[in-house]
Length: 448
Image (cartoon, rainbow, N blue to C red; front, side, top):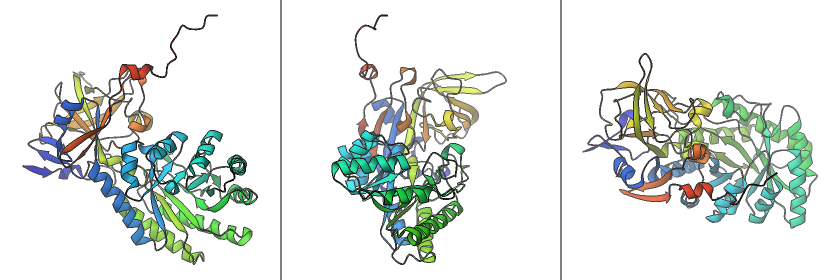
């Protein structure tokens, strides 16, 4: 009989069940998938992705009386199958490179719903954005204003732009995940006067259509207070620009970056509720600062739309007991497919996919296979003592794993499957050794 994985909270995909001790997602047994597709293997639950997209979209529409859109962060994980799925749900797409835009264009994602971000967009990237007629280009700096204006004139178009501003708000998150402080590489500071200078520069370029302002204060945010402070400063700035420069505010974005749980110790945050609260904060601020005509609002939930919709499956290769130290359980993946523990000290949970209901646990470390001492996926976790050949399932694996995966140690990047209604579909094959050498130029080395 299948029962819900109640103890896992909201870390695992929505359809997760235990069936006779086996982990089952989307009606598919993880052991069966590993046997069929090999490991490491990433398993995405289609039902969970759709639930996030619809839940976030509807929560914002209920809380904000004006036009609104929820954007998926392509940098979290970009692939044709997931962009096609989300395009059908009416969400927007946040891209930060020509490559991400290329994937969106390849699946014919509606261009009017694509927002092109980035602090150093190259000329080739902006040319592509103009050629594809993306909905919005989020301008980051004065050099970009001049470059984009020149390219727009050459092409004979007038792109809609948002100016990215920095509101100097502390998001209370990891230093590597903070983006809205005064001293940041992103945007132009309101406090320093740079943002006002940016508005002036855009207004001097007839080829650019300034629609409004964008800000982003970070990711993995679990509190509403930073958003309240950010939105207050955004609207105060918008009012100042309206009064001093006659800029009509048509659109505004407070970013997003809502927190997700990686372990049961992490704060419980319902991103749909957070989106609703942010929408209400924006509506209240618009009224407070005298914007009777509500601007269109775009919100970027970030990793929360996809993070806990996927599981990473690994096969145990060895179990090493260190006298006076830990027991290291080595798996066939690690930092090449999940760099976050090494880069950020990120913490994860895990279960034995074939013995989820075994309560006899011991403290172990889950070690990756790569040639780095820091390649430890989980430093300490209570698990039934794993055996060689067993499967370890790591949840909350949908964001910033595959998108930051590498071929370190000439590793092969893993396969990806999507599960739904008891069926699995391979959407990315495992790389081959030939794939590793595909970009290399054959021939003898140049001799001095």
